[in-house]
Length: 563
Image (cartoon, rainbow, N blue to C red; front, side, top):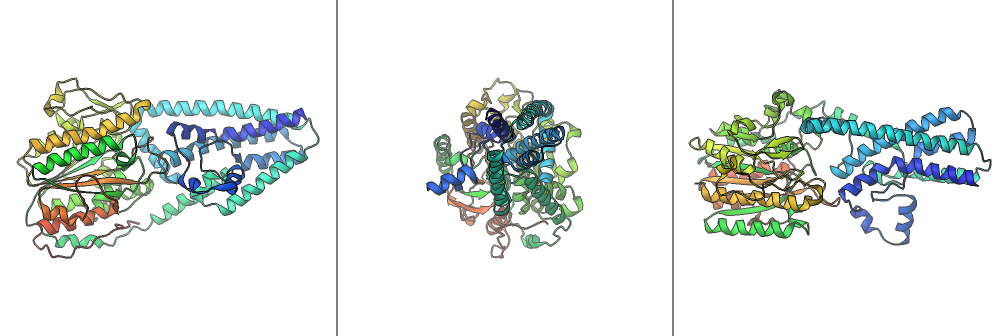
């Protein structure tokens, strides 16, 4: 009896250790059960969560492969050393794989696709540089330690199994568990399979590879149709300056989370009131981003090109094809063709050889790319990615704008950085933006325990300096567009959507009204996807500034597919 109990505890220990990363990642993110689980009630739901599926981040789950191997060994009672090694290797692979898929599902809130995720990891390693090396070393060290634990538990499992003869109860338990596993494999879709209590690692891995192959095959035929060719018929009669600001991690969470919304909404109301007194009009909406968090460039391309590409691997491949991308219509290209000077900012401290600049220039088809060294900045920098630096966003916006005075018309895209996780940000705007060069301004602490507070400060900082920027410059003939790229990572609830705010600010009433958004800076319900904004913006621009306002310019609510 004692040996059977030890065997059973070892079996549970091996299985639970495989899924331990799922629990740790959920604990780190403070993830709640998924909304689908919350809707199910009653006794049936309780039974299902015990034996079939759970939408929570716990480790009380079973690996189909480990149970199969254990069952075969119990029945055969041969080759104990072989099974010891195979079970240890399978459990270690399961631990690593569960860590990977849990990270993708919980942090980035999307289904794992290996090809896509490898490309995403490469970008992450480049961004985090030295920290990535430390993380990789730590991951290898943890994997080795866990492998030793698996070996010890497997050794104990096999040695105790050889000491008892009545195995009926254990065999029945494993067979029933495998029956539930087979049922889960047959009934549960890939996007919900992580909720299975009896989880087949190999099955999920094979489905993952199939999805990756499907993605590769779909990219073999790019879409060369040109549904946006109608934009060539839009002829601007007037040429207002245009400023786009991508507010990093500015998601609907900022307007809906109980701990954040009151402060941010109050700040928006204050800004709106000040702008109205000066004759500014505004309209706002929520727009569905293609991503939940991470990969801001995917969000940017959706807006600029009116094209939806959710997968990082697909996005990477498409935007390295210079010949194909050069044929696509985009907002920077449209305005460049009509005499605008087009500029994008990129104020992260990358080394020249770290970045594929051809892909960057394809994705951001601007005349000029202002890098961190182009800003003549001598002051205190803002930490980002742990070991990189960036500029205060107030300084970036004002310096870039001043450089463009006398070069109208211009299209300026400012890619903000101070509200990026870990939310290191100046705590308030300065009276004189040039003072960043000399003042020791205060920053948020960037600590995880203060993440919500720091995020709120970072978002409000954007609106603080924007108010000063608008009031202190002659912008009467200027269009300003603020948009969020994605929800903030790590602090956004699992049940949150992908909506991000878009704000239109201008003194041209015809232009603002053409968007048909809710008036003011507090967005109404979601009205579009990011990829629709290209056609919506040009429709409004033509009505307010075009030589033929009556020209029919179609709205592509779902954008266009590039493959």
